[in-house]
Image (cartoon, rainbow, N blue to C red; front, side):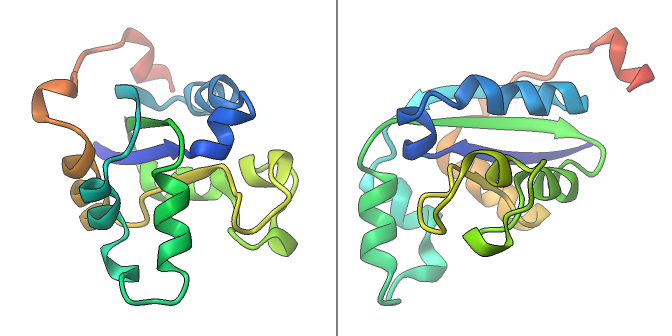
Length: 147
């Protein structure tokens, strides 16, 4: 089973969309194994966006992600990384397709509501950046064999 980090970014929290976003992942059949409302620290933000440090847009990214609470979640499931990226949709507002989370709720490239890990390696890094091992809970669900 793969795990991925899904963040409901500050704009998603401010707009009251966390419940709708969680609902979509639950309806898809993914299992929630970690969840917390938090303010991302400066250290966590720099670690999260480490590949963007030095880019002209980094400061704006950094200020946005630390500006307000976000909801950090960890989901588990078969191909959860690739499938959740499809559910999330494209980053560019002009490419956002209805039916995706961004396509249904976002209208701006920079305020795009949600982040999802793009690889197993990045998922592991991002999860470790925001969650201690004891904050992630593995458990069995009977429904899993039917989903």
